[in-house]
Length: 305
Image 1 (cartoon, rainbow, N blue to C red):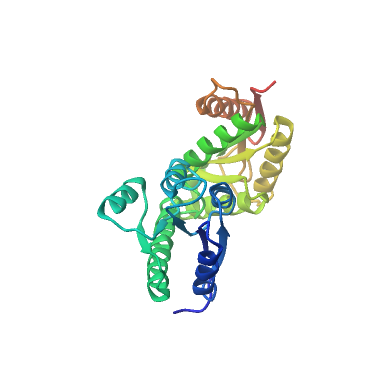
Image 2 (cartoon, rainbow, N blue to C red; image 1 turned 135 degrees about the vertical axis):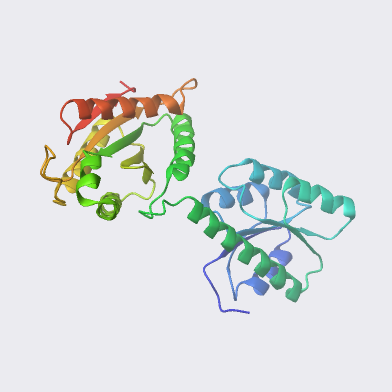
C-alpha cells in the first residue's frame, strides 16, 4: 500500500477496542478520527468533512442507519461515502443499508487486509468523484467557479444567513464596453482579458468563505457572507480600482481608455419568507444603475435597511 496520504477517515463505534483496532490498521496510511457516539460523529462529519466514514450499525445511543440517514439528508455531508461495520450480515441488512446510502459493508471481526482494501477502493472512488465535481464547477476559460458553482453556493449561503440572521452581500460586475474590446482586438485578446480580470478578482479575495465566479460572457459575481452593505461597497470599490489599475487598453472608439468594470452590490438580512431571487435582483438593479450613470463605478441596493 502507498505511504500515508492526506485523506481523512472517521471511524464511529461505541467499542474502544474496535476503534483502537481500526486506528492501528489505517493510521499508517490515513488520518483517522474516532467517535464513540452519534452526536460526536455528526459533529466531526459536519465540521471536518472526512473523505470516508466507517460506521458501526449497532451503537449504544442510536442506530447506525439513523446516523447514515442524517448524513445523507444534510447537503454538507451527503457526498461522504459510508461503509457500515457490522457483526451480523444478512441480505435484509445490506439492502436496508444500501437504500439509505451506504456504499459497502465490513464484517466483524475485522480482517486488516479486507479493511484496507475496501477503504482504499472507496477513497479512490471519492477522489475521482471529487475531481469530476470540481471540473464540472469550473469555468473552462478562466478556471474559476462557474454559474453552476455560484448557484449552489448562493443557495447554501442564503440559507445559512437566514438561520444565523447575518447579512449576505452579492456583487455582480460587468466588464464595460466588452463588445467594443472584442470587436477591436479580436476574441483571443478578449479571452486573455477575461482571464486577467478573473485572476485579479481571485487575488483580491482573501477570505475562504467568499466566492468569485464567472456567470457567463463578461459578467462575474462575488458572494460575500457575513458582510454588510457598507463593507461590501468598500470591497466592490477595491475590485473596481484593481481592474482599472491593470491598465488593459480599450478599443480606440471606447469612451474609457482602459478596461473597467461596473459593479452592483446587493445586501440582505434574510427572513423566513425571503428568497435568493430578491438578492439577485437587488444586485442586478444596482449594476444597471451603475451602467446608466456612466460605468466604471459601484452602486448599491440595501435590502437589509
